[in-house]
Image (cartoon, rainbow, N blue to C red; front, side, top):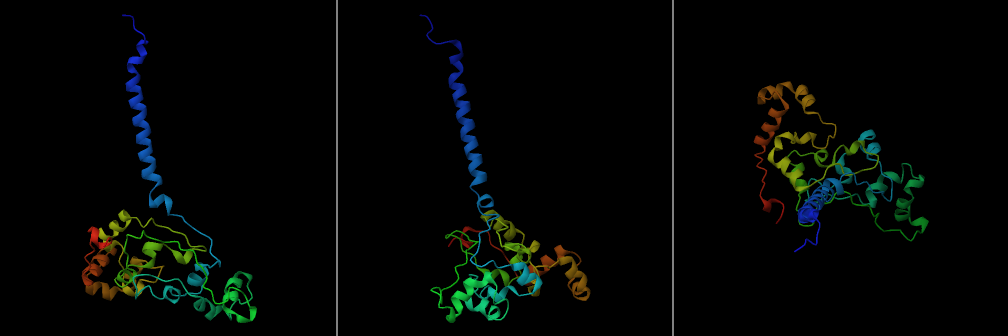
Amino acid sequence: MANFFPRWTNFLPLKIAICAGAVAGGAVLAFTYYATPKTLAVGYQPSQPIPFSHKIHVDQLGLDCRYCHSFVDVSGTSNVPGNNTCWNCHQHVAKDSPKLQPLRDRMDPALKSPDFGKPIEWVRIHKTPDYVYFNHSAHVNRGISCQSCHGRVDQMEVVYQENSLSMGWCLDCHRAPEKHIRPLEEVYNLKYDPEKYIAANPELMSKLGVKTTEDLGKKLVEHWQIKARESCATCHH
């Protein structure tokens, strides 16, 4: 019987299988890269109702993180500042700035604004999934700085998300906490340099037997008896 199909069709199933595999592999690779927190969250920088500059308030004026985020060391959740926190200063400082009109509308009854008494609706930037539990106070009270997760916020005119906050990113820290921990008095110092800290405290470092930044980290882990867990129940419970 004569062949109805040309010879090249013998390889057609193989070609289809190769193409299908390439498409499937490409889809997996694309999803692996583009559907991760590193791609979806890092760099997120929304506009806020008031253009608040951390560089001015923290770096230039020297405000402590806890002045605005007053629950960070006593609560599992850090808070954003309420209207009164801002108004304490800005009813006297830069009180006529047009950038602060949303604050005046909410705090000055003489303006008779329909927004009077309403909270400023700050746009949340850093957020873990609902099935993840993270306790701020447990970390900052054992030497993990705001900078470790949020980056050099004191240098940001507009805050953005610097780190992915993914599970792998968190586990990297839990597996080697000595690389991130610092003395408690330096937790809110976003300019902290461990080498300069060691050089500035020679007697204490000599007494503790600390010569390198790695020694300092290990000594702090030992002092606080930190045993960072890696089990699923640590964050998912």
